[in-house]
Image 1 (cartoon, rainbow, N blue to C red):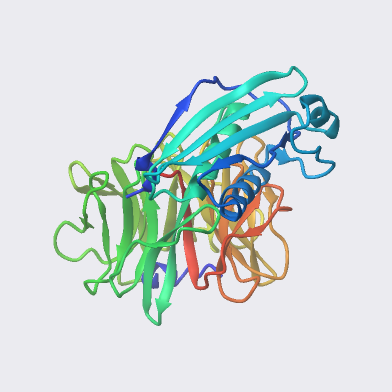
Image 2 (spheres, rainbow, N blue to C red):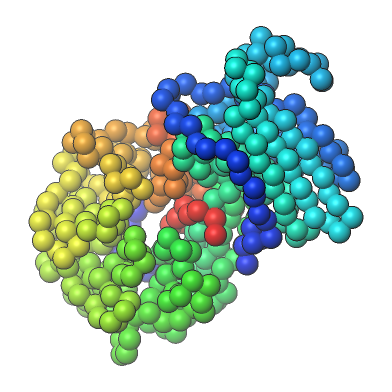
Length: 426
């Protein structure tokens, strides 16, 4: 459950070994219906068949099924080597052919092509190379993303990652990263203290709050792939700090600074000048800032009118207005990647559910329902899904959902998770 009055105070990518050759331009999808794709077993050389089945075929099928735009044909499959006409009659609109090869030096090669079964014309043709340290499943992720991109004009998110906080022992929380499918868990910090509120810039730089020195400090990376260092306060004590969030251009950090009276305000730190500016100034709690994609507006949670509600303001603190009007407790706003929607949580009958406010319509839609609590929504880079935490199986775990709320999937069985952030792979 979002603890609004307490949270303020207590709270080398292997792809560098992969290169792709692409020869196709994108095609914009105009229909909400899913394209049906058939994917016969790939031809292989130098690879174990069982490994290919589990680490490539099964992974690719799951990636495509969860893309929201491509459905993998699974019934009435023609025999191996069947003509294109047979696949068309079985319902396939695209027919994917693939060949996987592992060379003597361990390098992987994936040759993939897709055929439009109606026109009997090629629509996709790419070759991927990866060195021996790249897991086979990553080739499936990259292929899935490119197939989605070929269809919709926007790359998929199968190769994306999720950064989150996880409790490792009493009083100790660290940052972790996991692949979009729940595999590839990596621990990012090892401070042996409370490390909270992760944020990831568009170029992959981290920022977060850590208590490793006793008092809370904002740490992160000034440069891409640079060392982790203290970002704020520059000197002295900064008071109670939480919720650092990178601006879209990566030049500023919005964050929350509290005082001894229990009040807190939204601040913005300019990383170039190292100057912090206060955007809100009220007796109460202002917290959980979230930038819009243009970097000129901020959504945040405030109790200035009683219970917590979601408000909007310009990035200089002007033009303050309330967004949410229904419900007594609305919090944790997350602005969508294209700026048209804001996700948030709302309390009803003692539990929290996810809602999405569509700015163009001026109304909110409920995404999750049930007896469990759902919180900390964060958008996928393609805006088709959200990641969130829920206690529906006991301890707080990571889940994803589509915007209808009908396809809720548990990302992993890791317990004690909070504050997920969904990012593109770097």
